[in-house]
Image (cartoon, helix red, strand yellow):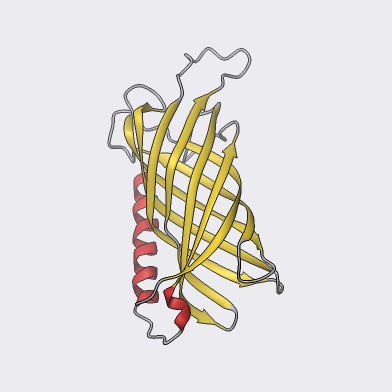
Length: 209
């Protein structure tokens, strides 16, 4: 079930990006990239029936969101939005009375090249951003339990608010739901979910053709 859903999301993102990239536009904003580093935290991984079933995991993210416009209608922009994760710490904090063996912290790097976002101006200084991305994470050990894998697929979606007084740097505050699993490429595939709250900044760079 999880493998089918992840494949469907990945295919949908790829098709959307292909369609968006094929749209002809003389808009000079096509050469502009937003670079938005952030720090995100999540405590007590939620447990679901179909997705992640691993509890008592906490996350610390240090990542960078990238965005560039591909289609604009009025003030609304469709953006290509990949991201990278130079550092992710996954730690195990057992609940009181838990009999599950304590797992040591694991660390990972990752990349999510299949991402799209929608930027909607709320006011002259505030923009609302909704985004989703699919990628991969490489951990320094098998996670989240033995018989799983160190390599995992990641899936995320969420939204943020961006405050800027001019075209200069901006502050971004947001939330995203993050899921990782090995999509049944190992004997065990419990999956781990996270409700991630993040704070970061945004810098705008223009890439000359």
